[in-house]
Length: 443
Image (cartoon, rainbow, N blue to C red; front, side, top):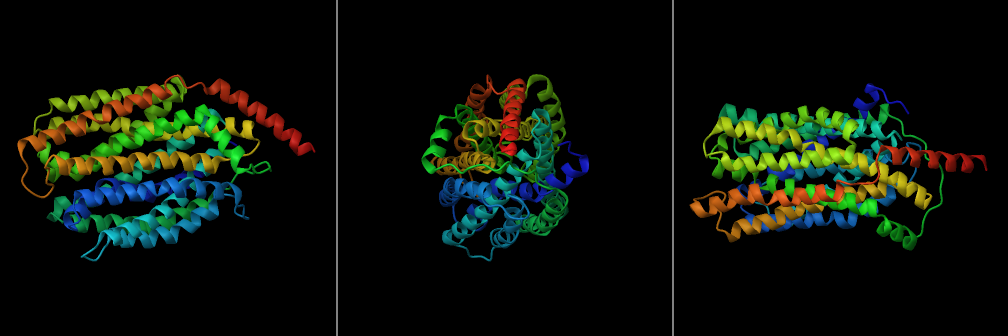
């Protein structure tokens, strides 16, 4: 299937509100509820970890449903449509709360929000993996999807940046503005995608029993390697993102520029994606992933050279670090599409939804652990987000931000570096699948 630019643009458009929702959940909401809503670091960290671990249960279930339930719209689009009202209501409740709030309020609406998030993200990624069977076009689709995701982050970051520059709005106003952005844009982009992009037909196949299905998953070493890498690239940014505002404010002492720094970070990410896409055509996707992560680690170490208050040097390092940020996610999603071909040949059935549910699950677990582990540690070292801090607490925060993500990212590199499913092997898989499907169709 040769995909036009118009088709790809329509398909990736829901990624804009999806990422506009995801960024505040990681960066702005934990400090907002810990400080402004008065719930405290440890309690907020626990709630956010529980809500992401909740996806360990819901992601595979919804992934299997996505594979098995077919309607006149196909296997993916009806789930995407269903996610819209769920997300709109939950975003309103979470982003525009009426004080005072309790941990039960936050926990309930976050759990429901992640159900809607899972419906949309799994179905959208699975749909993207099935748009094309070509190794490099899959990288193109996932690269443009990542482009849309980063664009959504840029767009939603403009709001707090403008508010900071024009009147020093409090964090509640910033969070509410980002919530309204998602609520308005979500139904528009979903309508654009589902009305303009068709799903590829899938060859009918028998359904596997639970035992055989689970056995094939556990034996699939390719899948396990991708999931380990995905867990690591969820955990490392989860740590960085959850304490980014604290780091910029208390360590770099440029808190008034925090939203602008995030904006520049994602502009750099936006510009870096075409670079990593082109590099993946030359080095293969798995090697490009490794190069990107090693580069990111080197840039992170250079933060040790930046002195507090040095806005221009921090801006430079921040931009260089941002160039890497978009690479890992879209490359692993594209690699996972190839892994589903391997599973299709082994199992005799197309289980793209299940595989992408596992991919989103590991990434969410990584992000959850980032908040759930680091926030209690910040409490333990005596860090106070809204008060006075000792030099020791700030120094500890600095080294947590810089040093902890590096070995995590390098582990992801080790797991993926010699990944055996390259373009040559993927073409062979597609040939074998085409032969099998032609035999099935002729019966």
